[in-house]
Length: 72
Image (cartoon, rainbow, N blue to C red; front, side):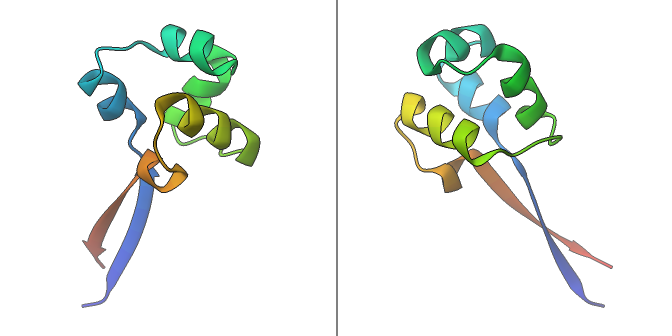
């Protein structure tokens, strides 16, 4: 069987660890809450949004994602 690597947003876990809401992140980052929600739902990944979120959280853009391996 082959393995497929899938990448998905890890924002929910990051916010939970920091006891922070999407609204608070929106205020801190200047990114609209709706854009944060779309990223968190894996719907859109715009570079400028990822940059602003990662900068506000003081983490790398890579840290906003988690890798999952799946056998197919």
